[in-house]
Length: 151
Image 1 (cartoon, rainbow, N blue to C red):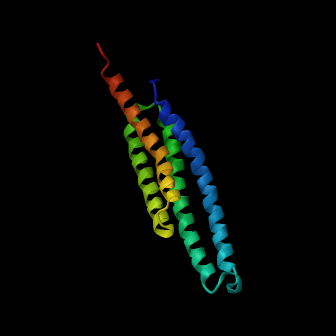
Image 2: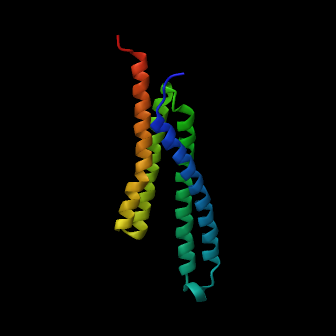
Image 3: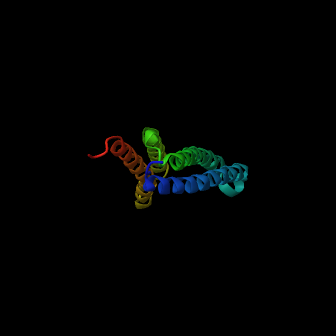
């Protein structure tokens, strides 16, 4: 058994946790969207409940997709944190997670505008996927070192 990337394993575990929580929150968002759609116009204003419900559905679907990708990436990372031959797979998955995170951030900024909070959300949302990518690169480097040991 070869030495693995501890960073990749730790970040993968975090991705599993946050991915699972994200899936639950997206399902709650869909439930909330149903309540918004059913809200009487007298309370929400004419058409406001439906508009908010549509936005909540789109947001929840984006969160669901991002969380599912993150969960899969976490599982792959934990399984392969000590298999340097699979480092390339982990790097590809990291790039997919980063892309999905960026798309989610673009949607967030386009719907609520760019504020300090959304800027902070962009940075925080990219930290774990970037650390995952760094862990995958470490794993690749470990594999290259074990392939060509120093003499």
